[in-house]
Image 1 (cartoon, helix red, strand yellow):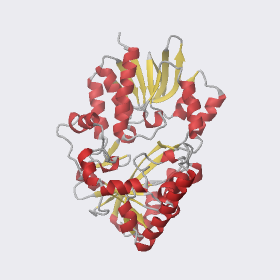
Image 2 (cartoon, rainbow, N blue to C red; image 1 turned 30 degrees about the vertical axis):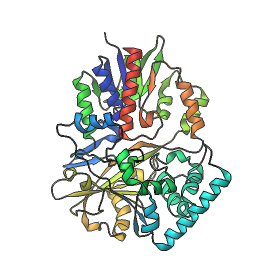
Image 3 (cartoon, one colour; image 1 turned 90 degrees about the vertical axis):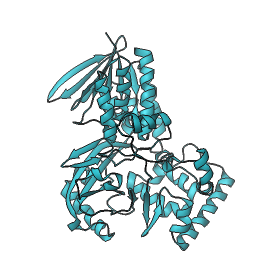
Length: 457
């Protein structure tokens, strides 16, 4: 009888690991709490609209992963495009992530001069005092790399709006790696872009070509799921895992709820993509109190997306616009990703709304969110209330790991406790408490599947 591996969570990480294991001959069961697969990489299909939990663009500097997604999963290769992202700063549109040209040319003379002087002061300070230590906060990082002026006017308000946490309490780890780029290195990249394009040695991930399936980003996960079930894997939807018991002989027993009843499945190994706080809470035997306490400190920020269906076209002039001091922190135009995401003659403007679990935004209806946001949209000349035909909402409570400045201590304690549990592997953005892009999730899933195969099959 083949080894049975149980995967907790049917997001892109769990599906990719499951597909590799099933193809290697394992009996694999994936348990997914939602009525659809894909997790944060999913697309919700409703009334002819295809709305991502994002939306996302696919990009990768991993040639194998890129070839697999672009050509291996689809009948026709996904076409390449260029990402267009802007930041609305005091009425002006800047390149985003922030570049030297944006600071010097797009901010205006006074603001650009203030930012440049502030940056030069920060560079002198770094030489005198040395680089920040590993425990640096967002404030430390932003002031050291961009100066106090841009920290006060850009990084502080945007970061605190997005995370809902003061910059002095956030680790600089919450800044994505591709954004954690110093002003001077950005200048070098700008001046040497031609050579960078030739050698690839200086290319940032943000400048890579991007790809998008016609009917939504979730088509990637849907194709992986089809390959998984085609290889004999079982994908069980609407299954909420309530207990993971580790038993003698390196066996595991998983209990889940489906359609009002409880069922169990046993196996020789388990791969968890569940949030670490959730995993610790359902683990049996019950972990020690210090581990439970540390797990409760590992927070996740929710994702709430309000999609406004409109007949207006070419509203934003690109994929994304980041904004300050609005009920939302990012706008996306779905027809810029693919015209097929909306019915003919329609378009969707997606608003990512910062929130916390249980707050007024999280519990609001679609109509209530429209009322909350429509005034700012009209004030900025984006959409009037009359432009909005209808609204859709997608949300998930565990989207972004929140890296408070003391997160590393709590994460280390939890991982140290879990490490000796021989049948258990952690995987994915929520499962590893690690900010990962989709291509990185796929690569890590393949690697984790190989590790499980070597141990269990």
